[in-house]
Image (tube, rainbow, N blue to C red; front, side, top):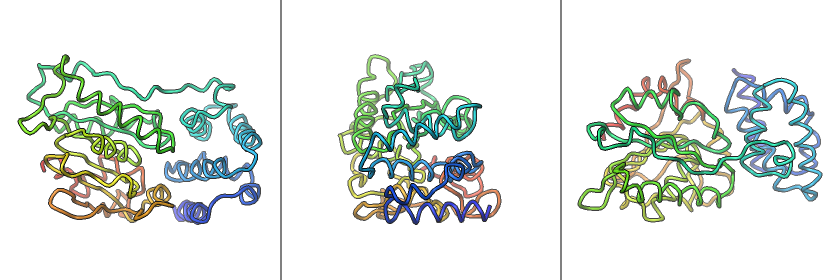
Length: 315
């Protein structure tokens, strides 16, 4: 565990100053692959951030993409965490090599499931949104840990899929899809509005998925509640609190290094939103090992239970 935390801090330090070509060249391929194969999802995510930052700064983008392609092929002999992680990066960012390698891409749209029907009006409704490079993760999809956690707490749940690209434009596009999905669902009777125009749905979003939800609020969507989990707090995504009837609830952890990486370079970037009547911060203090939870543990039902975060569902 300590070794993983040291590696995470080393990558975060590199990201803070910017990953330039000479820095990336000094990292051995086997070191990158080892980090991408780590059982720690946070270390894998930080490693992807490192690769993405290198790609964004490289003077020769074609050469940089070839280096990533080589990494992909080095991990392609068997199904590994590294190959899966790189595949999600390739697909989300629509790298040229993604088309050559036939890596699947996602549409960024979701369909209304049958559970959101007139027959289920006695249950609350929730939409789950994944973060960067996490479209294929299980936690928010049917049968996943947090999906089941919400269904066991009397919610009907819909996973919302988007590209997961580490780009502002992709988050805005996903926010438009999210808004339209909710506002144009009238013929399906999926969501209803109260007298003040708020739709009867709660949004639970992890990492930059939270910024997709906050952007949807800024585009005019009005819902009952938005719950952020490890969302990088950035100035351009400040919550528009008048568009939530119950509030925006921000779950964060001091052990989350990925959240900090996602907020780098942003004015007023950080962990917490401004406290107010409708903007509430919740510090998750301990995971199952009595340590500060990591980024990917903030959507873990065990962490929610241990930190009494379930109270948020009753706000």
